[in-house]
Amino acid sequence: MDPSRRTLLKASLLLPLAALLPMSLLSSFAWGQAAQKMQTLTLAIHSASGPHRLEAEVAETASQRQRGLMGRENLPEERGMLFRFENEQSASNAFWMYNTLIPLDIAFIDANGRIVAINTMPPCESFSPSECPSYPAGAAYHSALEVNGGYFAERGIKVGDCVSIPDEVGFCQPDN
Image 1: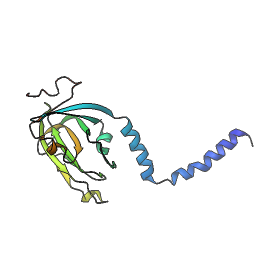
Image 2: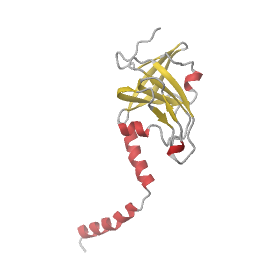
Image 3: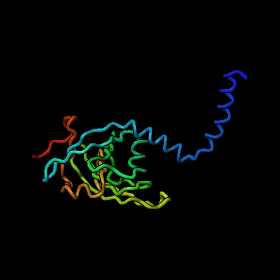
Image 4: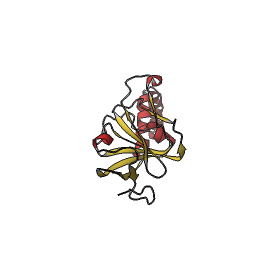
């Protein structure tokens, strides 16, 4: 048997085995690939207690926003995820915690970089997406920032505070 036929035969035997792989394994690989392509920005949150810097992965595409921080077992202390939208989002638009393993805080941010709402979101322990609560903003927003649960309270960050991206002029001008 020549080498090219042998290679073709091996490939034809392995292809059906790939079909037997659990879809969760294949989708985890695909989601991991999407996460690797995310841009990271340094953010500064300006509050009464001073500026707080953190590194945020940027979820700009629909698939990145849908995936969010699902499946993560931890999030480093000074890290987060910034969800950016092309258009203003309705106050009734919500985030949910299906397949999210860690408690998160979320700040909804207007077009001027001001925090308009903050929610604390515990992980959903249900295997059924329909049994996971959703967390609406309650105010129109252009972006949302997810961080570890308790992050905002521990630093005195509240509604009205300003989130800036030092590398992007005009996103937010802090009062101080």
